[in-house]
Amino acid sequence: MRRTRVEVAIVGAGPVGLTLACLLQQQGISFGLYERRRELHRQPQAHVINMRTLEIFRQLGIDRKVAAAGAPLARMRYINWVQSLAGREFGRLSLMGANPEGMIERLSYSPTMVVNLAQNRLEPILHERLQQLGGAVHFNATMVSAHSGDTSASLTIMDPVGQETTVTADYVVACDGAGSAVRRGLGIEMMGPSSLQKFINIYFTANLDRVLGGRHGPVHWIIGPDVRAVLIGFDLARVWALMVPFGDPDHVDDYTPEVARNLVAKAIGDPTIPFEITSIGNWNMSAQVAEAYGAGRIFLAGDAAHRFPPSGGLGLNTGVQDAHNLAWKLAAVLKGHADAALLETYQSERQPIAQVNCEQSLMNSMKMGAVDDVLGASSLAPVRPSDAFATVTVIPDLGFGGDGDGDGDGPQVHAKRAEVQDAINQQAEHFDSLGIDMGVTYEVGAFVHDGSAPVANSVQTYFPNTRPGARMPHAWLTKAGRRVSTLDLISSNGFTLMISDTGTQWRSGVSEVARLTGQFIAVISIGPEGDYQDPHAQWRNAGGPQGEGAILVRADGHVAWRTITAVNDPTSELCSAINHILCKSFAPASELVA
Image (cartoon, rainbow, N blue to C red; front, side, top):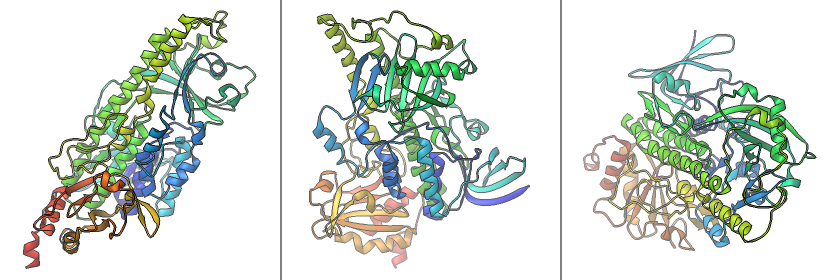
């Protein structure tokens, strides 16, 4: 049996595992990244990358590449409810919003934008970046077992010919997906419903421009008399997935290529549109969060720790943000800068966020029933294999009148259409969750509470703020005429102290605090005479420190501590805050200075 030693062993090279590996590599932490597949994912799978995740990718230097690879924003226009793509339209939801000024305001909250990019196109970008940083993935490496001990953890990995390798590590992170073998081996249970709906996934390529017209968008709900499905657009040009609900007594094997082809044809609704099926799969929709985010020296991240309905696109994003939270904590502990108790804050911070996101995803899914109720047709009623061959001679008008190819007229039809559109408008939270995206705030964890009340963010609204535990807000600053985001100033290898240009009391003590704690502390002053200027008062309005105030920011961009006024002993105050955050006691500054 072969043996190897690393500081962190990562199981699973999906977006979460790859992101974690890149972040650890940046921190100079040795790792082994083990993937049972022989290559990266080939199917599109997840496709929504929100602004917070893009900010993390920005830290890795790949945000522009990810954005450039995504679907054109001009095609991210609508969510459509239709009988078929070529048939009757029930209604649509604009992704651009009813208020153009509101869209402009959204652009002020982050230096990034939401990207629609399939997972199988995101993973190569992450993999390439990992290789550029000097890291690698061990493919064809099946996890046999994982064990946690008092001073180390271990993995047993098997290659395709049965050769086993024992990997000894300080810590193990399981990023091995919804069916996580590591989680099962630890005996960690999942909380929440294990199966809400089962789907057949039919991946295909086609040019659907002719039937879509000007209704391009990432999601199309198909509610026809003999096919019900969700059509997902990945590049919004040629790559699609038709998610068809199914259930007992039917089995996945009943959905043969012939069945799949007929279902896609019915969903398109125009027999002259050519398409090619690339693969057929299945998946189970659940809404669960792990009861624990690890055991001993083994941690869970991504789908191994939480499974959401896809409604809202929060799964991949929550997982990448798990990795961002865990990476700096692992590095701080492994470098001896923090006590191992810091790692306990991974669960106390991330599990509540997963629960909120899980509940929101489930609510989004359940709210879809409001459209069904008004239409009088179920969007997720199971589709039998025999439905693929059924010939519908009479298309129900569902109160729209007409013959199914067009609508009738009159007050009743107009009232029906207005009622359906109102129900569709109520789905806005499903596709517009700015508050959940930007407003991630921890209530318990590695930061110092200042007694301030929680900021009243909602699903759709976000109020930039610097309350401890919150993501530090983005603001555009300038330096020598060059525009810079506050997020670009955050150190990935320590802490960042944000002060005003008049906060001179903080500079003299920072080098002493760094010496006492072993932490690198970058100091950034903002103001007319500072390192950076705030010409439009964006930073001031977002809660940036004024006068002798200061904000301490963690490597993952969350506010760790702040004071809005001057303090008597800045060195001791800052040292005390870092002691608390890193769960480690240091000698008082007065003793070492003497």
